[in-house]
Length: 142
Image (cartoon, rainbow, N blue to C red):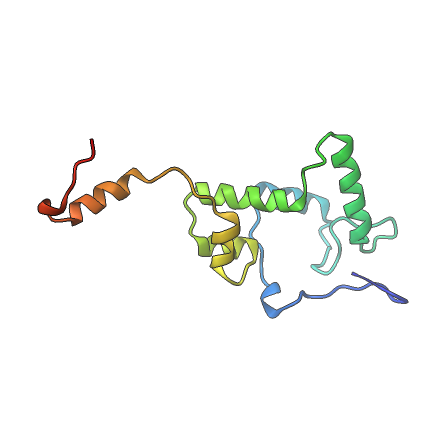
């Protein structure tokens, strides 16, 4: 993060929960390893600036916006990427807790309320409810 009179300064996040490993797809791990030199340390940037230092996040975001707009996708923002990731995990039947962990939310209810969508009605729910109700209480809808 840029700090006046100091330049770019790294920090470890807003809370202690921000410091944790983030699982990546194997193809990303392979691509990132290909960019690093064998002598690289964890504190070195993977995508260094021209002086081999850290890139200004604001500048990187500006370049991403310019590329996105030039490609004709002005609607493609980081919240859209987060929602897409959450939707993919939801469709793969991950729990709200697992999705919240992946999105780095402290509460699963946030992932549940904001990112998980209400899909089609579960047909198994009706049959389970029927199995649990006494025969005298069952009503046939015509």
